[in-house]
Length: 130
Image (cartoon, rainbow, N blue to C red; front, side, top):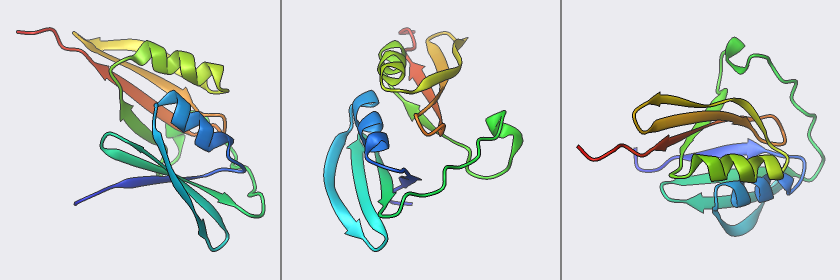
């Protein structure tokens, strides 16, 4: 594999702004793509696309817990400052589903929801020098 992009569908630009601000991603030029506009956000090692259809899509029915159904259910993003990510996410309409939790020395995770209730696992790895 050479490259991976993750795509989301949002009702408007709010989801674009959420991911750009929370994960400090660069907004690339948006592209008209058939039924709507595709916004691309770039960070180190990842591109997140948010399709905003011209006609508002039907909101997805959330499944609780998120792992109770098969399919693409969450995305994992690594970040060096978990607490700052949580603070930015909550300030922009996201919520904490689980954590933050320490998995081991220097490894913490939190499971968040974005404003559309998509699930994001954020991992912070700060291993002490050996």
